Length: 381
Image (tube, rainbow, N blue to C red):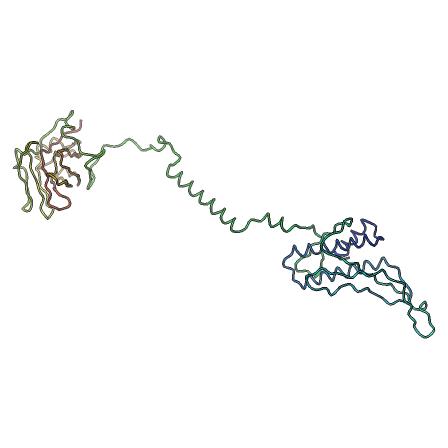
């Protein structure tokens, strides 16, 4: 017994199968279940759908024939169902009247039909509309595999709209995954950069070491690293004079550079001007001074200002012989008299000779001049 026949017979057993109206409701329910099964399988072609409807039409005809009595001398008669229904339409079968009184068929002259063999009259299949299940008929659910030529399974009814509602489109899935990935990456970088940390947690560095001299250090004209005001570095320091305008003999200027002692309301100073080649003016640091600095941490102080109306940038280099150098530093020098400090940690060696501090008055080589009032050094306590 195939699945179609089994489903219909099970439904008939749930009611009065002898009642023609009940059987018709069962048949209609069978067609409705078949249509739902076809709609749930979009891969089913029109040809396959027609074959399945013809198969259930034939099965209903076969089952219905069992409920009609046999009559004598009547050839099989079928109130033809619409077996050849058009593709895509539900198999509509014209409902004819129940088998009428059997016609008499004569085998020969003078022979009544009662002498002919008895045969069963095939039933008239009721008009079955597949669009709904009639009230009072047991529900028949069929699902047909897409590869099958006829309905061969009974499966629960499915609501395609409910199935589609549970599925997320690929675009939504991709967008969700991308959004979650972006949020995760953002949180990772935020944690790495310390966004969620307090100031105390971020301050994990060891205590700051004393500043050391680095090549090409630059000190701006203002701000935290601005040069000290004149006299600001005097407190609790024992200064050793390195240069004073009163003794310009310890200054050496190349041929394209200038060094001239001048004086105004601010006091005496040495106006230095580097040449076009960028040559620097050298200030001697006596050997006796270096001997006092050996093995110690010293702070040098250059008191200077720019020429009137010509702010400039100066560069400072040092050569302390056996005691090394101070690296190169740059300072933005304004028109106000200021102190420009740098520190050096000297090794514990004998200097062996004097040293020099070289100042380029214009780092940009535009011929600007600088007034140097004093150069001095002190040892850190």
